[in-house]
Length: 116
Image (cartoon, rainbow, N blue to C red; front, side, top):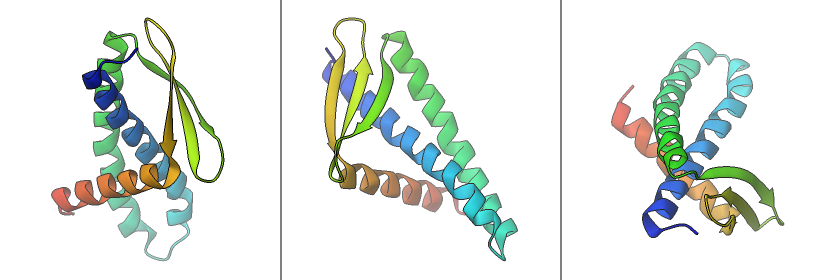
């Protein structure tokens, strides 16, 4: 069972993980652009910043023996997130579009605060 503060921390962790994965998948695509050096430096700074927060969140969750087991896509609209806890394992259902929107908001807000 997740306490409300643990669930909030886990949600932050999930969004950070998805942001890191998304940026890592984008690297090969960006490398093929004409202005790749410009974009890659921006992407790299953003990835380093987010990765640091990702690992900090992961460490905090590990202290409470909480970890992500897997994200299972149910259909085009929903995904189940399987979480292992010290007590019972938990499955949370998320709307895919909501996750995508939150990852985009995170990346935009981080980019705007870093002023490259």
